[in-house]
Amino acid sequence: MDKFINWLGTSFAPKVAKAMDKKIIRTLSGALMANVPILLLGSLISIYNLFAGYVSFLPDLSPVYNFSFGILSLTLVFLVGYHGAKEYGFKEYGVSTGLIALMMFFMVIKPTIENFQFTVSFGRFGGSGMISAFFSGIVTIVISNLYFKLHLFEDSETLPDFLVRWLNQVIPGIIVLVLTTILIYWCNIDLFALITALFSPLIEIGQTYPGFILCIFIPVFFYSFGINSWFMNPITSPIGLAGITANALAFEAGLAPTNIYTANVTFSVIFIGGMGMTLALNIMMLRSKSKRIRKFGQISMIPSLFNINEPLVYGAPIALNPILMIPMWINGLVIPTIAWIAFSSGWVTIPHAVMNVNQLPFPLCSFLATHGDFRVILLVAVLFIVSWLIWWPFFKAHETKTLKEEMGE
Image (cartoon, rainbow, N blue to C red; front, side):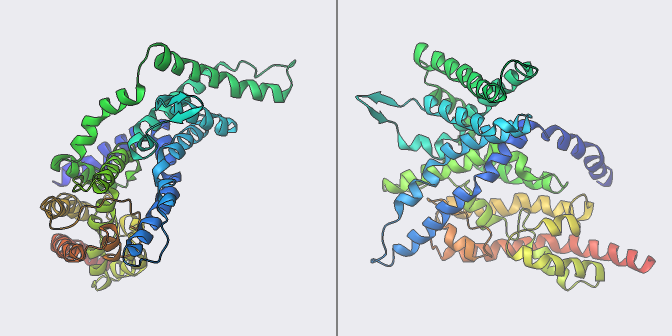
């Protein structure tokens, strides 16, 4: 086992980190991170609506939710273009690249325009349009990058600078939009429907038990090697947001939500103390016999209460520590399995509105994420106890090893 973990840490993990450190991955991850305030805004309104359901005189703020989280794809496609321009070396054209991507996205969702009336399904602007937003942004970046590599006006001495800038903004836009026009309006291809159909199996798999486990375990596994989980977001975020969007539509239609893999469940129910379920370990560290472990436990405790565990993962450390990596993997399989059973059996309410409240302490964030379901508090207590039992023997082994090192010093 030691040889295997050593190979993972010295050979496998560095190669994966290098492979994942690609411009397109950084572009999509950067766009998703920049879009977090939009999710937070929608979450705050969801919390407000939760209380408004019990207080009749509070005004209806649903439009705020609809025009924040509800138009998530619009903001996302612009950010993909903007961040892509920075990653590929033409950041001075970031705004224009983002706007071109936005225009292409409007063409991809294929609205009907008749008698000056613009009609499109509102759902295409939300979580269900994320894949098309990614597609529009990536196509715009690729074409723009190819154009800027030509350096057509770089050494021009006859054209003024402002004209060169205009041409560099206009020409990529013409190419992108003309090609999109040919595909959508001349060849009569519904790109939105095609893209949705191509990726729907992936989204559907993500809502099965094996897909649910993989979407949680894979980021935890790589996080144990110090690799940030953001590289998985271009895959997991569309699955989660499409799931919560479908749940919202089902709830509005009077049907029971069925999609379990959502950010509400992952970050506000499963990841107690942060990715890898590390709060139990942090509490153990506070009473450790080792001064070094106890000190790291004290430093990491406040962030852990707010589900920020980078100080613990990199400081304890858990990352690349063979003793503590294994329980992190076990938690990444066992804890989501218990949660899946609880949600799929109907014992706990499946979320139907985005609640980006994972920076609040447990179980408060769990209570809000499940729309005030008190049963989730008991579920979180069970998950915490199980994670404690998983961490305990490995923590004692780590403590013993550290004490020997301290005695040697």
